[in-house]
Length: 298
Image 1: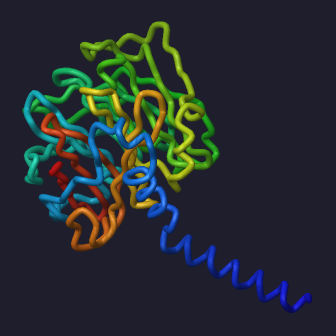
Image 2 (image 1 turned 90 degrees about the vertical axis):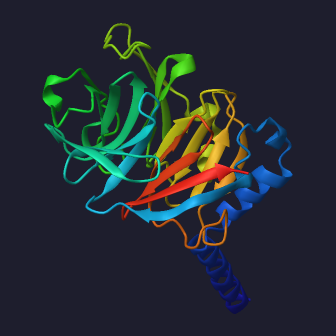
Image 3 (image 1 turned 120 degrees about the horizontal axis):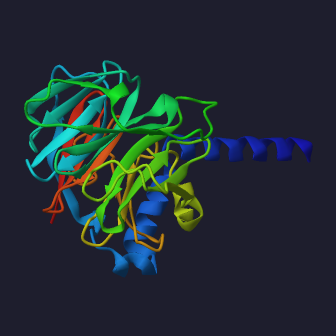
């Protein structure tokens, strides 16, 4: 009996380990949200229908790109480098347009466009948000001289803190995701106004994690963006290689797998670090080692 129990335990461990290595839970959630769940009709983006139009385009000369945002006034993308602190402006097809040195920060992990030339960058090691202004002539920014907000939330593991950020224009709020241990989705109001000007009055912070129970289906939270038309959230998991769409009420309604053979990918996305949506509903993803992906709806 003991031998049988022992063998059964080994088989079970083997199945669970294999499932973990193959990310079986990602496939399960992908099938559920796209083809089984009754919430699918609530989807706006229908992520299952997206196909890669740019598949793993190299971004030469960049190291450790992390975070991504779309800048509507210039129709360009912005990302940050977390080893050598820089902000990089890219065309929507991945050409490097401008590089800006940032002093006074370490480990930048996220960036979001707020209004005009106003952006917010995230420093993961300190859970710090910094408001910066970027124009086409900018070559250097001293972050220590900019409006900033530091949140003393679980600084025990400085490499698993604020990982992604987005500006939710319709709700006049910042949304930040904490990578893991634990995963969190936070809403911050009052740091900036809708016109991008600093506020720092009546700042409020709310943990939205309980409203989004399906966050637990993702191994980590690498980045976040918002579909401005509907207010739906789109979250990116690097470890699960999964993108998921959520309604305002917290329901997961569609998903996209970042695996070889899915959505026109020739290879799996190696380390997805940033995601953003353009006005034409195209989805842009940046990954390490510094590759750009563009997915368009069919």
